[in-house]
Length: 465
Image (cartoon, rainbow, N blue to C red; front, side, top):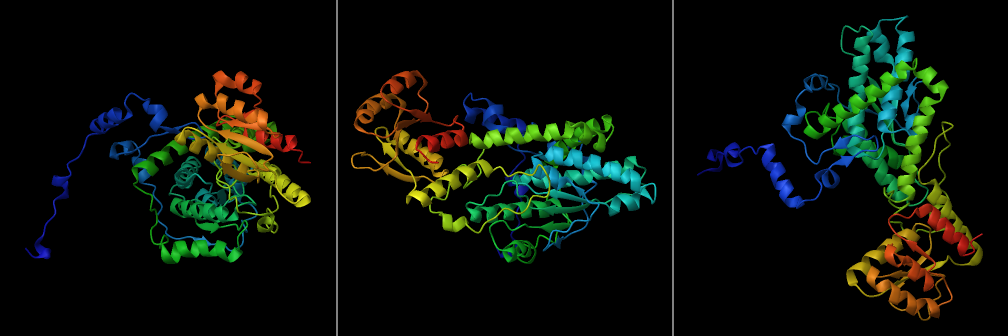
């Protein structure tokens, strides 16, 4: 049969599968494990994200689907120059705000400005002229949904002010500094690229990619690639209709609207800011994020995990953070940068960095996993790392035993009496800690360790001034 006459009937070959059947298969694969703990992701804002979404998840979102963006493309901003009266929600982000806070507080500030402007001109005109500046953070799908949710919220605000026709929100987006580092700046480039992509897919009207450790022309070329090679300026709302993105947009919009209503109940944005409630809420979010990073529950690649061990002082000497735009701006990499710089300064003064010997023995799987953990752990401080099964002849300043829990006590009893440098254990064998300490072990590193505090402590113990 000629190719032109071949007919495909995919609907018949792939009949619909009810959600209940999917869930049954998942339950079997989990083998009794908790579904919520294993498969449901909880964002830093506290709402849940399911492992998959289907058409049925769009039920009730008809109004949202009707407000899809109709304009395609965006303006490439080579210089960041927001309007003087723009709503700077991006500064909330830089201060530590979550996506929900960035939206909720940003909308609250926008309402105050709209109330003043609508006294002088029609609300449709006033609401359409206002510019909002958001930051596109690293949580890819969240950031796409955040910008889409912003348009929904602003449309609802305009309607509440009496707008007789739909109002398009004017959105400018910039890549943030909060998650950038002066170390491993190639990773900064990767971060900026995914952030730019989420901003574009979320429907920004203008985008500024801030160079952080890479050339300005590269920052501009990121956007040119998205336009000229990826053709992302050809579609108005590329995420529209996605079961996941539409559901996420709705969840973010609902939580941000609740926060906005709470601000209104306090008397509006200015009063809530002056009372300190906004600052306290953002500070709490910031503290929780910092804790998750210093404990390494959350990774910042190249900073608190997976460091570039080949990077030297020469690689970072010309990288300087841009000047802060707001009083409370911070970067989550700062604690680890201070630790890394301390090591570099010590190495410059003494001629070499402290050396950590990862001493492996016993169970192949466990010694490999724990030596890799220790390599990333101490590598984040800029220490020199050596891995070996022998300690004789090593000039290490610190030894890390890497093995399995049952083998650690005999391991420690063999090594500790024969070396003059501190010995620690990679792991947390709770039932053997006292015995290991009695054998000469000076400490433990594990997934519950506060990495920043532990690394700084070992810098002190190793005499790094």
